[in-house]
Length: 637
Image 1: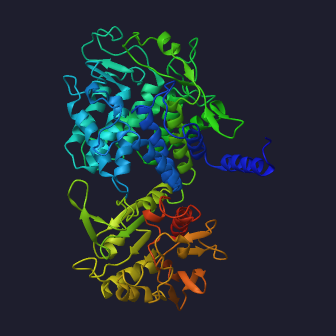
Image 2: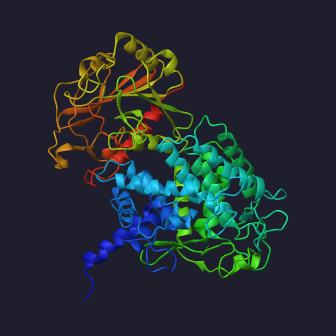
Image 3: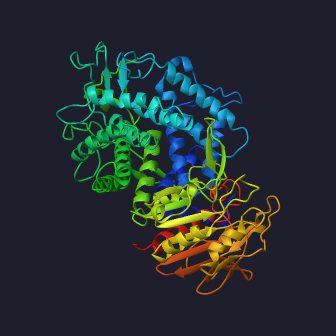
């Protein structure tokens, strides 16, 4: 039967749309299309709990944060659910192997546990199992984890990526501050024993006993500088620093390790292609080749490290040269519209059966594969970083503050401690602004909280100040109502050039009277009218169409804003968004500053993460456009 014209047109449009998407999304979609139901590693025909699975789930998670498309989280959840049982046990996982390669998927468990969803306790129980393995993992005499139980006394660079990002996130989430010393120790030992003093490169492995045939009898290190091993180490550093406490004395040491490594990576980057070789320091030796996974890992680490200020900004250019080389050399556009990445070495190890001696000839003997997951995952992660780099200047040097004083609700966190929640940057559940904060970070801005009443001192250096849904007595026993002194401080700050955003809620869930005293200064009032009262999952009842109001929302057209309080405007205040005769959003220019008001906190996680409302709504895109607009309104004070 011949395909219909309609079907052919649909296929053409799907391919064309995918071709316009960012590379991270194109590769994630290509991967999912090839692994619809489960993740197969290498040539295996059976699924198993595996580090490549964990690498891919983390890469897909990053695309979810960039797009707000729930399909990416659902893919992660469904994959985990093939392994994790209700009691937290993990199918195919063998704790007795004491293998660090079993830990990376634990990061996906922690992501799933932090979301609002039923039955999520099983993900914590499974993560606890992996943590128990880490507590029992055998160590060298100086405290370095054996890579596997069957590889005694050996530390591999791979192991730093396999174990430490999971350990750092778990320690943060479940309050194990003492473990950060242990995390730092792993990096210290690699720096002490595996770094070559002459080149600055890092040997793949180190045998404390010096008994392995591959180990140098004096130093214990393996013979060669394998690209991907160094890539694992570089990625481990930038991933661990996401969670390492800012005030921990060892944090500065980790940053110094990255600062030491960055110029070494730049030195061994091929000047013509921007890529790196399989054996990093032997570019002219017969048989050596440009290798995809190492190149992607180095680009990711350099781009992220420079963006976050760990290494000089000049390394962003090094990363960009590398990424351009990756696109030119390794990326293949397939006839079916999907994309592939070529030239990833399938594996690299030491010892075992048959014995891997770590020589140059050994590393070049391993097969090269197309779409090996160790290339696919790092390519997605590198692509995400390059996409962030393209927009990171928008908020560079700017600070966005969220009020935690007028909105002040608490709950017990995963460690059993009291924490603020509900419209906070840290809250990853549906009630929080974690995704909105992540948008600001990608735009280059810093997010902070203000837990006390606004003053000239704590508003100093703030570019955007956001007050959301002030508490009623129903929500907080002793709410902090907005007072005349607060209004005076905020007014002076706005007049000097500050950007203020006021987000109310429906009248039954927001302390409107005092909030209106503040809004009145700028010609804005939240009315007593409630509209868009949504019943159950009838999401169209919360629809707001953006038609002519294109000052803020340049492309987003269909928004979901439920149970909102429309505005009444006077003086210099003007509508920024009107729907069916109601003013949904208003702008007031006041002195050098700007005030933006809306009657609902409509961009919290529940309505950005793509998991609840219909995919036709564009809240995530709108949140990004709103953030860009707010940042651009700020002026130097």
